[in-house]
Image 1 (cartoon, rainbow, N blue to C red):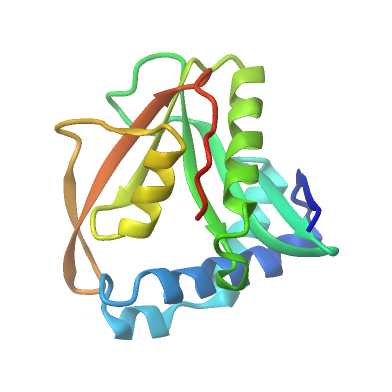
Image 2 (cartoon, rainbow, N blue to C red; image 1 turned 90 degrees about the vertical axis):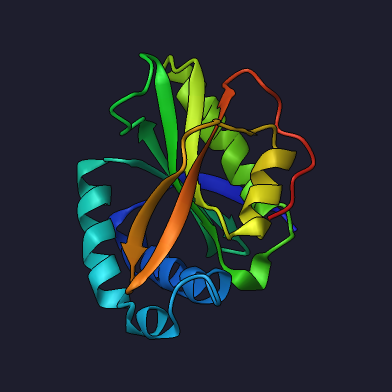
Length: 179
């Protein structure tokens, strides 16, 4: 399976939104209330991603397999108020559930790290829901480490969820992680 990583275009906004919603609905079962997951709107996400692609903020790369978008990663400077200068952030990384554990997430993460390095970022952070053990295993296998004391709690769909920040130096190699 050949994976092509390339920048998103406006024509890709719908597929990016479909993967965004579909992945949430698969990955967050039991973490986020079912009613919230069922209420996710591809149309609203498409509008959001259309605007992001148009403004090129954040940077958005797609993984194509046989011409179809199978996953994507968005990244830019860290949005965290306490981020050290030179910190980039993986804003989101989603792979269509039909392509989980096929190396697409690893390929997207590697290319995002290369782009952040090219842009001069020395470290990378990302946020992950504490109950999302699959994602945590993926990021830890890729060399990310928990940023101790970073936990934050917020409400999502009427449920309190905890989010954790993970970080690493840009120069760390991506290892055999499989999302």
